[in-house]
Amino acid sequence: VQLQASGGGLVQAGGSLRLSCAASGRTFSSYVMGWFRQAPDKEREFVAAINWSGGSTYYGDSVKGRFTISRDNAKNTVYLQMNSLKPEDTAVYYCAADRSSDTNYVSVRVAYDYWGQGTQVTVSS
Image (cartoon, rainbow, N blue to C red; front, side, top):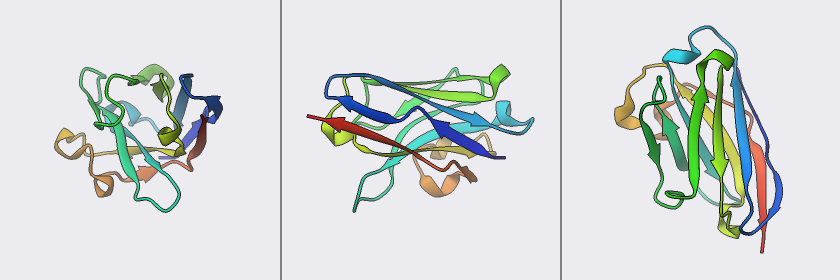
């Protein structure tokens, strides 16, 4: 499975961005998909995850109420809609896939088997 993240950029505080992650492979629809982010000199942080059907979503505390994760299995794509962006959201955002379909560890980085290359999000104050 290959993951290609896109949609990052520079935005002012309070603005919005939508990230996309396109996946190759026929088994995408069975995977848990997640988004993580990493700011300079910080650990990679869980942002959001979604189960195979899109019926269950999970968020890190710092983004709850502002970010929305979704997926389109017909297009092998997962999205991250980011609203009310803050300067502290500045980071490289990575999408990831967990082929186990287990939602007990969605916030655990090592649970994910495949990672995209990352897309930079910069929020100016």
